[in-house]
Length: 321
Image 1 (tube, rainbow, N blue to C red):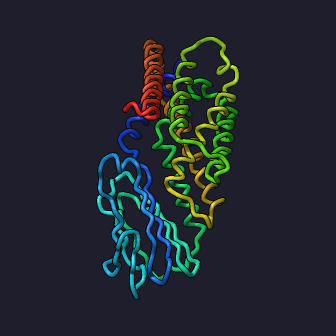
Image 2: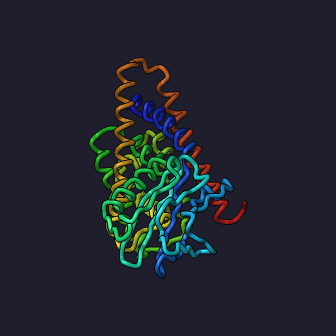
Image 3: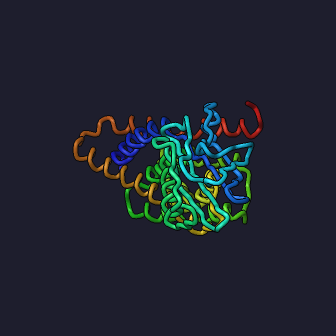
C-alpha cells in the first residue's frame, strides 16, 4: 500500500508539471447569420489568454468586412479561411456557426492549425458527429489540463488505494459531478464560480490531510461519501468551464453528454496510467527504504497546493489583491 501511494504521487508530480506548463483553456467564437451573408459575432477568448495579454482575434476571408460585432461577407458568403493569429500552441477555439437556412457548424481549432477552411459543403450541414467529437475532446482536455480536478481524483486513489472500494468511490464522484454539471448548464442551479473554486481547493487539501492520518476517520471509512459530496462541487466547476466555451442550443443534450463522457474518459485514463506506472516501477524496484519519506513529501506537496489555492482564491473573493 505504501509503495502504491509513493508511486502514485511520483506519477502525479510528472502529470502536474505537464499540466502547469500547457493549460491554456478554450476560446469561443459564435457566428449567427442575421441576414444573407451578414453575421453577428460573439468572441470570448480564454481567460488564460487574456491574463497573458495576448492579442488573439478571428481573421476572416479577405472578401469579408468586419465592423464591430458585425461580419459582412457580401455575395461570396462566409467561405474560405477563418484564422486565429497568435493562438498559443496548447490552446484551442470552439467555432460555432449558424446559418439562416438552419445549417449549423461546430468545430474545434487547435493552436497547431490555427485555422479552419469553410467550403460550400459546410453550409446547411447539421452534423451531430461534429458536436459529439468536439465536446468530447473538450471534456478530455478539461480533466487532463485541469490540475485541481486531477489532483482530487489522484487524492481519492491515494486515500483508497488500487482496490475494489476505489470503483465505488470514483463512481460516486462521477454521479455527483454529472448531476450538478447538468443542473448548472441548464440553469436549474446557478452559483458564483469563485466560492466553488475555493471549495474545490479545500477538497484537495482535505484528501491530502486524510492520506496522512492513519486513524479510521470518516473519509477512510466512507471515501465514497467524501467523493460524492465534493463531486457535487466539482461538477459546478466543470459547468463554469463549459459555460465559457458555450453549448449549442440545438444540440444541448448531446453536447452536455459528450462533454461529460470526455471528462470520464480522461479521468479513467489518468487512473489507468497511474496504475500502470505503479505496477511497472513496483516490478523494477523492490527496496522500500525511501518509501515513507517520499510518500510524506508527496502528500505535503499536494496539501500545500490545495492550501495555496484556498488562500489565493479566498483573497480573490474578498478582493484583497
